[in-house]
Amino acid sequence: MAKEISIWATIVVYVGLMLGLGMVSSRKVKDISNFTVGKRNAGAWLSALSYGTAYFSAVMFVGYSGSSGWDFGLWSVLVGVGNAVFGALLAWLVLASRTRTVAHTFNIKSMPQLFYERYKSKRMLTFSAVIIFIFLLPYSASVYKGLTYVCSILLGIDEMVCMVIIAVVSALLLLIGGYLATLKADFVQGIIMMVGVVLLIYYVLKSPVVVDAGSISGLWNYMKDNGMQPMAVSKWVKLIATILMTSFGTWGLPQMIHKYYGIKDEHEIKRGTVISTFFALLVAGGGYFIGSFGRLYFSEIPEGGRDAIIPNMLNMSNLPSVLMGIILVLLISASVSTLSAITLTASSTVMMDLIKPAVKKQRSESFDTKVLKILCLVFVVLSFVVANTKTPILDMMSYSWGILSGSFMAPYLLALYWKGVNRAGAWAGMLSGFAVAFVPASSKLITIFLAEAPGQIINLAGQGPLFAVIAILVSLIMCTFFSLMFSKLPKNEEFYVQSGI
Image (tube, rainbow, N blue to C red; front, side, top):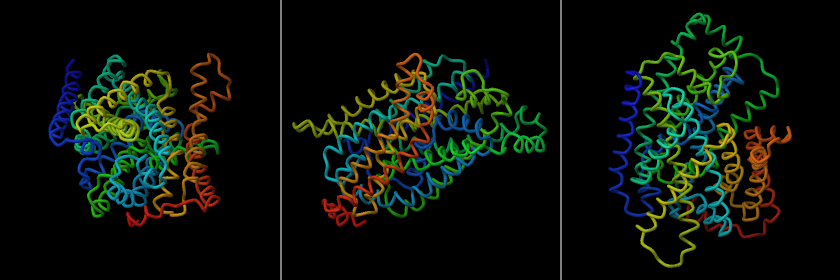
């Protein structure tokens, strides 16, 4: 009983701190611009930790690290390294400065607005806004599901109760303070995540299961025999696809790109690049390192599937009560920050790019902000519904990342660096990327509605990461090819003249 009290006390302190930050930030939310991008003066630490906490959630700790560790052993740490090098360092070097410049020049608050300013297509703005709202739902649902596994196993509470608590906390944080609240909360949550991962690694290595393996010598033998064993070509393909999707997949995710809009200046971008890379290396590298010990804890996949590996590992590691509370706060922090980023991005996109242009009558900024808050609530509820489907965490996330990055990365990235890309190329990249990435997601829908789906369909439903990578490559090729084929179409060179990129 004392253990549960300590854990719950730690969680209550965390929730109180987050709501307090939200209430303080709410005083500065005067219009929809403040609610979505703040005052565009965020410093390096706020921006970098906000980016990192939106990047990594319980999906990574529970879904990906457990599943990858079981499949690839210690090789799975390469996923965390790839996330740091490609998903953080290279992403900031290539995207942050130019995206910030364009966003400040044209007062851009969403990715559809960026597409409109570059390609001057209202249909593209509408299409991208709809895609963002619909296909961020599976990702949001996967975050709920990941955290639910942990709380239900470690605290013994009903999964439905856990989901409701997470939904309420993340919704309140957003509704009270908007972007400024999530930014400050992400800073605190980022610190909690870094400290928590270090403590988690320490105590997992000290756990009876690892010590019983023969301390350092036994640990080394485990790494040789089960941790870094030779893998078949098919496993290497799967591992590389996972690395590429979870690293380059962030380049086209609207909630990640959104973090660049509010950075103060170039100096803060340089500092933010270093901070973001360090954060990703510690949190992602540490998370996948912990997951690589799955086969040391279990001889076969535990009840609940691969998503239950990490929660059961924590339960078996005899962590001190207060530390268990900290670890749960770590996972809650990671999840709430990601949920807030996803919800704000999806809801603000619908409000600013679909509803506001459609309503011809002029309305006050406070009214628009209220409508945006209602959309946030709707998105949270829909995510809750999707989370209650029987879909593995890894699959839900890969569907979302694959479709969004497959659709948006090429027209977004090329718009920042190539004056020759045009509307025809952008449409070709969007539609081809969407079509490829939608294959596993549509296969999953078939398995849901058919009692006995064909084996090929079931197999396709589990190939989300591979199709996500293929979608990004196909989109880049098609975007380039059609831009060259229709090179006589207008290029909107004024976009580059005004922004100076």
